[in-house]
Image (cartoon, rainbow over all chains, first blue to last red; front, side):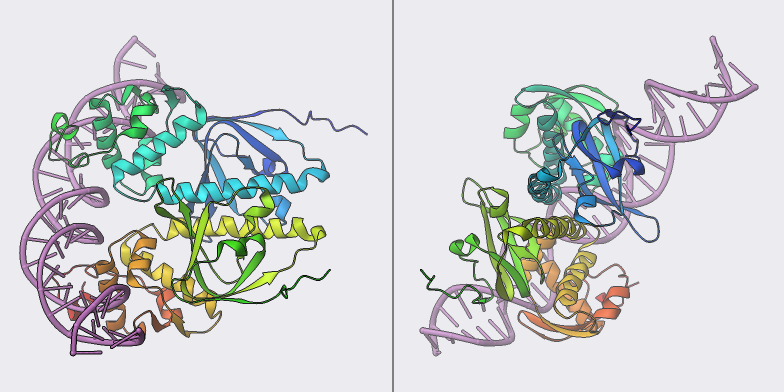
Length: 210
Length: 210
DNA sequence: CGCGGTTTTGAGTTACATCAACATGCGTGG
DNA sequence: CCACGCATGTTGATGTAACTCAAAACCGCG
């Protein structure tokens, strides 16, 4: 007896779309874009748990026998493809899932360490590098400011000011809502000075302030 | 030919002791205490990666084929026991390791969300609950203030003020250097008011401030 | 006893949140 | 086609949580 659906149909998520609950019966690989993985609290609130970047596996929890109480949605347009797992491969899948879980833990700590400009910088680099490996001027879809603020643990107004400073420093150009292209290498190397988050300082000074 | 060492010798670490590099050829289970897991940067600096609590497995990375660039040390006196892994059990070990990695990721985000008093509260609860499950007045070895501050991402002076407030609220008693006993249930339920971190406010007001 | 690590306390400063407008784009329906 | 919400992004004024700096008290220990 044949299964009706072709198993390897890719899955596209627009900005904000949730990963359908039914999809978690399978394992998926994120091909492009970025996801946010949330923990659902008893009172229905959703709390940040981790993010997923291209290459990450989704739906591995089921392989561990755990009931998955997570809720996942796209913070930039994302494409997933289904992964068939021969049972002989289970170990290998668990190994890589474990390793990336570890790595994402490191990332999450880094996204909440240091000044807000630094945290935003790290987030942008994560997004850019994982979607355009080895390109200097990477144009990338970006999450909304509120999303970014929530991930790095700050206020969206502050993120706006940081992004504004980056524009002035010409580390980021072609800025539109939820997209932008930035100079990856310079962004990676730069260290920020004070003043980038102050609202009482005019923007043109903010980016240069000693 | 017999191996000289008995394989199941437990391992005790005092406050500050590092998990010996050689130990990572085996898998260990943390029986009591708490560890801090660091990532070693190219320049030799150590960055917080995660923490380990009783029940967690150490040295799983080797099972995934990864070279382990982590450095682990005890933040409270800890005891580990070696875990023998029949190869048939590899999958099961990876499953639980994956799940706790996920959980620690959640914990790390929580330890860096919200006000510093809340973060300290969460850290204390993690330590107390994992070492004395289901006891209300749990006395527990604590990390140094600098350690706690580094984990929650704040200054140790601020943590000192928070702890001081907790003493005044009688959520914590018998406070000595790197130890204390606190009322787990009350600590779990309580929500803080402002003023706990202000240095210009006298302590007796801090704990009650509206 | 003096010495290094931990903890405490205070005074002064600041990075960032909060609050409050306002601008802009986009889809939907009249 | 415009009017209208509604989400996103920008900008400024103001307040404060928490940092930095400085100093002292408190250990346990060789």
